[in-house]
Image (cartoon, rainbow, N blue to C red; front, side, top):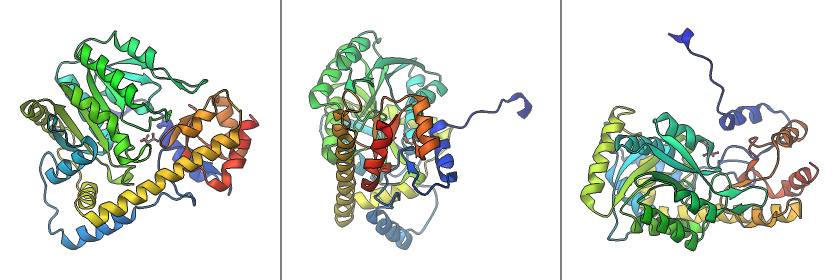
Amino acid sequence: MFDRLTRQPEDPLLALIGIFKADPRADKVDLGVGVYRDEAGHSPIFRAVKAAERIIWESQDSKSYVAPEGDQLFLDLLWSLVGGSAPSVHAAGVQTPGGSGALRLAADLIRQAGTGKIWLGLPTWPNHAGIFAAAGLEVETYPYFDVPSQTLQLDRMLEALQRAAPGDAVLIHASCHNPTGAPLSTEDFARITAVMAARGLVPLIDSAYQGFGAGLEGDAAGLRAMVAAVPEALLAVSCSKSFGLYRERTGALYAVASAQAAAETARSNLVSIARTSYSMPPDHGSAIVKTILDTPDLYADWSSELETMRQRLAALRRSFAEALGGRWSNTIAIGVQEGMFSLLPVTPAEVMTLREKHGVYMPTSGRINIAGLKLADVARVAGLFKSL
Ligand code: LMR
């Protein structure tokens, strides 16, 4: 059997982790994979996560199965954090192995419901297309962002969505767009929502960076308004970044509807799809998130640590944009974009020059993880981009 297989290339973004590690240069800079880093270049464990782990270690008395849908209290608390509390919005969720697990489950549900198509923005997180194609969906694209001018292409996006058929799914980033960092304003969300509602499109909202852009509430405001205004939506939530639980694979997928019965029917399908895939979700990460969200002291500490991270990112952005000066036509936009990423107008050849000559690592798309910069490195790294 195996000799009929061809060797697959490594995922280029994940491969960067190993290539960076192997570089012996002391002044190397990792602007690759999207993990938060502190000024020392370390991806820290939140204090509240450590405290929650201690509580779990002391109190947990069994590792038996929880439930096919995961831990209901985790699902309820996470829904309140992300989805809010509008009484007209009914959500039924399942716990998933990370945000990617939620997206794959959503893709399988979309397929199971007989919808063949999903629309993705250009550009988007590279793995989106792979996940939906693997589930057998046809992937269509809408324009989202123009890299040279660093501007959102909202009118072109809405024009493209006029071509979508009723029932088509449309992927939307809740906040901190990956890879562009280009934020959608409240008005932008309202215009997209109006088109979705008028054309009967089903939003699949990917919320993976809550707290890193406009804060915990601000990053959820657009998605909350959207799910309240359409009859059906799917919401994929990742706890990887907001709780720093990357390797614990913690997330959830919510079917959101204007009637509870419809959401519950969707959930029963999600549970049955998961049963034939990974059976049941892992528990440790969700137990941590549940403990934090359910313990006022831990919640306060977690949210203040997250806010500190958000402010560090914003400060790094400002100084990086300032240090770049007029390097590109709209460099100033990089300073006000949100979250970890910006997509720079550099060529793959320039990316390789930075990597090989200077030890500055980023994917060939030109995406940078702002958190990988240190304040102390900003001037030098900006100087390297200016020298290209
Ligand atoms: C990223 O975009 O860097 C992260 O979401 C990590 C990943 O899985 O690609």
